[in-house]
Length: 148
Image (cartoon, rainbow, N blue to C red; front, top):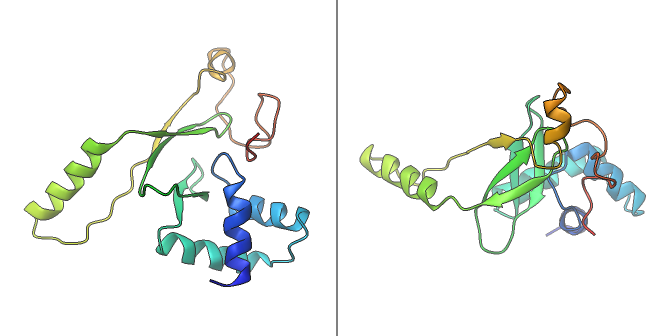
């Protein structure tokens, strides 16, 4: 593993929710790690390919990244307003994907499941007619990408 990938993984580990490559690049710069944006993209692709990070797409189709926990592949429910994410139990999805692949004669089947909604903290804003959006910091008092 290159020092750049290690730096990306370390900073990504400090993020509570999914982040874009640009957000991650800014966090690396703020931490004094001079890693170019192209290198960040390259590192994220390599880390995703080896199962070290999870990747989802937001409503605009942008890829967002989160360090994968040690227990493997996960599915997340993401808030369309603030971007908060929460892992969800999805054994039934895993079993279904395996069965569909096996029944069709396929091996090494991969899948992507995107679950989005509006979290309990954002529901009052959504009920007032505010359109769900993911731009900028969360409304809940802290930047959405950092854990406490």
